[in-house]
Amino acid sequence: MRPVSVWQWSPWGLLLCLLCSSCLGSPSPSTGPEKKAGSQGLRFRLAGFPRKPYEGRVEIQRAGEWGTICDDDFTLQAAHILCRELGFTEATGWTHSAKYGPGTGRIWLDNLSCSGTEQSVTECASRGWGNSDCTHDEDAGVICKDQRLPGFSDSNVIEARVRLKGGAHPGEGRVEVLKASTWGTVCDRKWDLHAASVVCRELGFGSAREALSGARMGQGMGAIHLSEVRCSGQELSLWKCPHKNITAEDCSHSQDAGVRCNLPYTGAETRIRLSGGRSQHEGRVEVQIGGPGPLRWGLICGDDWGTLEAMVACRQLGLGYANHGLQETWYWDSGNITEVVMSGVRCTGTELSLDQCAHHGTHITCKRTGTRFTAGVICSETASDLLLHSALVQETAYIEDRPLHMLYCAAEENCLASSARSANWPYGHRRLLRFSSQIHNLGRADFRPKAGRHSWVWHECHGHYHSMDIFTHYDILTPNGTKVAEGHKASFCLEDTECQEDVSKRYECANFGEQGITVGCWDLYRHDIDCQWIDITDVKPGNYILQVVINPNFEVAESDFTNNAMKCNCKYDGHRIWVHNCHIGI
Image 1 (cartoon, one colour):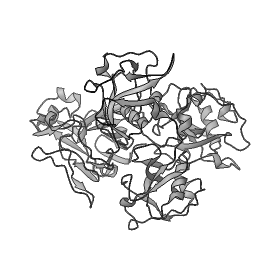
Image 2: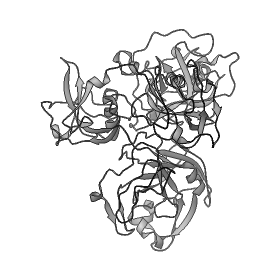
Image 3: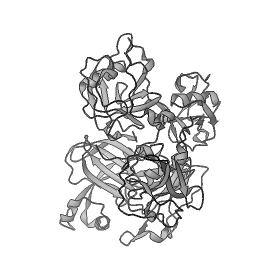
Image 4: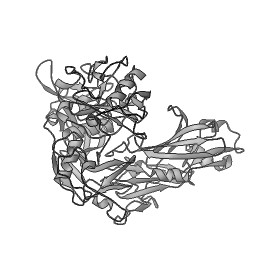
């Protein structure tokens, strides 16, 4: 089992099934396959990015909930069965290690073993529905032959879809749709409950509770795909509704449409509470557990508790996002609750309740004992959301051979490869891949450094303060994910370089000013400033992946971490480099 890492929070499917232990890991009676492709009661789709229509991460909808397949023991024979379920004649290959990006929600199948002759995936051997020890870093994908089965009825096959972004609670957010492999928003003209209900049902929720206009869930970025959407409310997809294809002059992101969906009551919020805080949005986390004996309340060990775990706790509490995840809570009164009942909590950030996160179970292990070292949270209804302008990276990338005598400050800040330490200073040079980074805040709260000005670190060589030790990671990876070069960028100056027309700048680094990025503004790190590079001196010619990750340690809470990573394809011939196909997230 690979280490857990965080990924996106995306639509959750049927919450009741997800949270009720009666349906977790319990295989339902196997049903015979229909005569057409597609197993009865199951739906299949290919998802992920980038991909072609006949390839992608395999996702299965069972009991109203979408999930993935672990790549453990996965073979071409299993890929054949799944491609036929998807309406293709056969598979030409399969992928492992989440090549098309990690999914979310349940991992429905693990150790899937097929002979290739089965009529349905339900006839293949596995550990059982929902029984898996994998993470979404192990999601399997398939590459099908681009040839359809004769007479195939594709009512079970759903192309990936629509998504919600920017919402503080499950089932709400800005509506975004996928068109030609590009996500875009929907204009709110003529947006109503009928259209919103189509979106909610498409995502596995109930009908819509509210149709939101005026970018109530924050403004998107990039394309606006649809306008004047008119649905009857019975359509299976928003794309099936009559709509107008938009032009740049028709609408702006200040008119982005959103939804709030009706959700089934699960009672998850009754199994968690906060105590000791100054308001209902903060405090020491207490959870209710049962057995042996009656239900009782207890505390959570603070070891390794961080932003991701706090995100899940705030979500379960119905309090929105996490501002902070705290490992020490000695300043909050614990009352009469002193028993630690949960330890080793590790969340991906997408879970709906803490009991869905990995933890030690009944065997409690806590390095630091006592109530002062138990977990706490500070929640908020709004959060920032950073997004890198990927096209600018592609447009500005180039190679520079920079003399060593001009790199002393960069070496002091560890911006060069380790081999630079043994170079013949000040003679010679380092080969640098340089590019610009333009980072937008699309959230509903300003992005601010976690540390206050009193704890910023002064760097004499460059003559500036660092408000965050590591703001961005830069990596060069082989096609199979092996890192061959890396760089990092400290936030020596988080400020509003430019803003949207109706937004005023708030942050400026000059004269020890406050640092941050205002909602609707962006910070620009130009390609010609120190450390805005990756040292590729030791990289051999070949095909690579350029990866840029913002806020990589989740030091500052955001509403969505899935769009913090950007990947580009690179070709390096030893003299020049070509950067292309840059894209965000999965």
